[in-house]
Length: 142
Image 1 (spheres, rainbow, N blue to C red):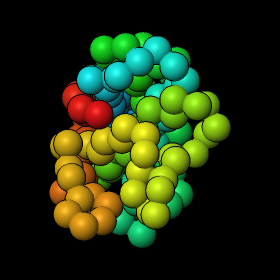
Image 2: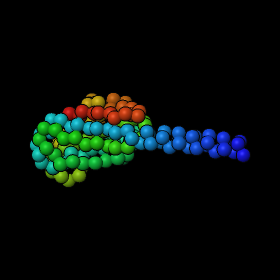
Image 3: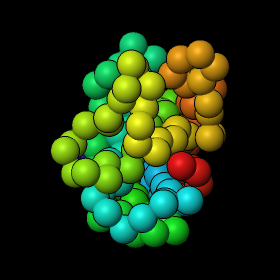
Image 4: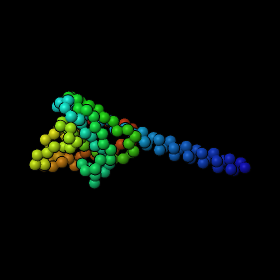
C-alpha cells in the first residue's frame, strides 16, 4: 500500500509539473508598437507569422486596430515559444489589402526588427525573432 501511495504522489507531482510547464509556455506575449502613423484614417492591419514558408502569405494570427496619427499598440497574447515575424500596414482606405502600384506598396508598411527589403519585400531572416517565456516588445516604424 505504501508503494502505491508513493507512486500516486510521484505521478501527481509529474502531472503538476507538466501542467505548470504548459501554462508558462502559453503566457508569452508579443507587444507591438507601431510608430510614424501618418493619419487617423483607416486601420493598422497586423499579421504574425510562425514560419518562413508562410511569411507575407499566410498569417499565424492577425489583428487590426483603428489608426491613430502617431502611434498605436497591439498585443498578441499566449503565443507559444518559437520563432516569429510580424508584418503590418496602414490600411488608410480600409479595404483590407495593401494597395500597390506596379507591385510597389502605396500604403505605409513595416516589419519586425524594422527589416527592409532591397528590390523586393523584407526577408524572413531579417524580420524573425524568438520568443521564449517572456514578453517581447517590437517597435515597428511605418
